[in-house]
Image (cartoon, rainbow, N blue to C red; front, side, top):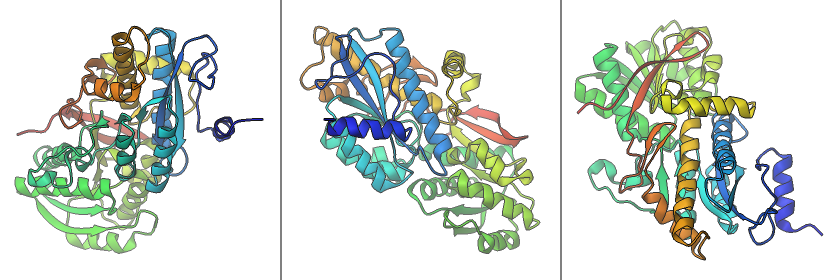
Length: 408
């Protein structure tokens, strides 16, 4: 008779939501057929739906990290496997997935999710289980620094939460500085999707843009599920703005840009890392040329440290691109691997009975050169790497324009 766990695994494989490395099967005690110990790294991301292009890149990149750790026998006696669950960019699904992952004692770390709003529903579940969570994409400052971070009251609520991406406290102002100082844009219309990520990003952008002397020509919100943005487009057209800043993600940003251009308002739409995907260009159409976005870190393709990752990703034959967060997902998974290695070596080559708590403690102290540069975490669990890049739509994709850090 098949166990409940095996039924779940079989269903996940059929749905394409679980990727296993070919390195020995698990037994009921967390062992593998070759006599070693199996460590599972959970992955939570939108694997279906509008944001799946980003989510699949996260999953595949974490999978690649596990495969390479196994090929190198990086942690003696340990086989790493990935268990990837689909949250469909929904907070309720994310919370359910967090509960599933914590129920499997072999899961010693989790990579994900993509959305800050999903992470809000997962953090306590992981923290209660002392299970390390490392997001390659969350940018809402409140996830690490508490709800009153903007007032200077920074408090780390969950010690189990980390991220390899920098935050919107930096990204929004970075975009404002580029637009005002470099692109010469002085009058902006600000739009957001009212979600945790979008509204937060738009807020930090507005604060810096007005501080620099920029004018806010108007503000509004949209429902990203609706693809008819005619009401807000009319407001943009009559505002006299020379740029639109959008806090949200590409499934809505693309059509919004297209409708703004179709109204005869030929001004660029600018967004954050949630906009940076080739699908944005497809959705926005020909008028997208010259639209801009910022994204975390330097372009992966430009980093010497990332060349091996890019080559190995291609060799692995994944049908989906690693997308905006692939390098950060790979580094997040590798941070778990490094933590497991430290714990195993400190315990005479074996995992201790309190492995989760020990791995969580070890993650806080990781420090290595990853795909995206130096990987380490500060006292809040935030990435110490604060670099960002401005991208512009040229042809059928985004091309890097300028990389740097927030001035001042």
